[in-house]
Length: 180
Image 1 (cartoon, rainbow, N blue to C red):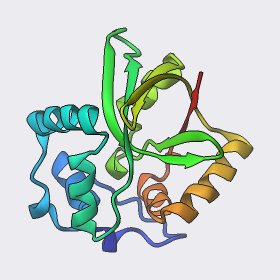
Image 2 (image 1 turned 120 degrees about the vertical axis):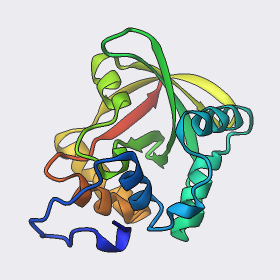
Image 3 (image 1 turned 45 degrees about the vertical axis):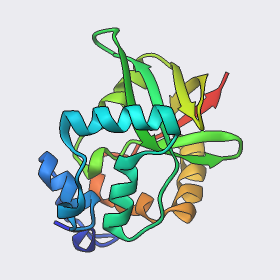
Image 4 (image 1 turned 180 degrees about the vertical axis):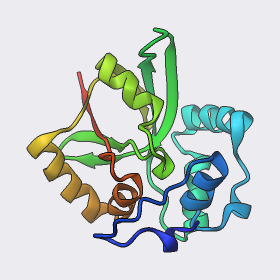
């Protein structure tokens, strides 16, 4: 499956990636052979590099594979919804009206990513952006707030609509990270 094979807008098809390999195929625009950093070790390397430099090699490789520009990436630190353990992940972000917004695409998969569940359970989080770590209040946008954010994000990155179509029937979570 490639991004060119996404369901068309208004389509009733809910074909979506299920496995990690299918998510990589979708997220790489069909150029999975260009994805060098993957798995547990790839994520560990990327996390260290992102923490040190503010630049994500993982995000860069997907951008190159898709032939699109690199998206700035932050580290999000949450508390596990079930375990209470500290969790972290690197996520491309958008700056909208003085706040940071991340999309819970989960590679177009059928479920929300783990960090969305964590944010819903505990809104106190931290982010590391441009070499600076700060506390944030995180929430999943809903209603009018989500509609406005979706429109703005879609103008910034058309993959927002692509991910929403791929995620259907679930609603693509848009998570607002407001500095405390």
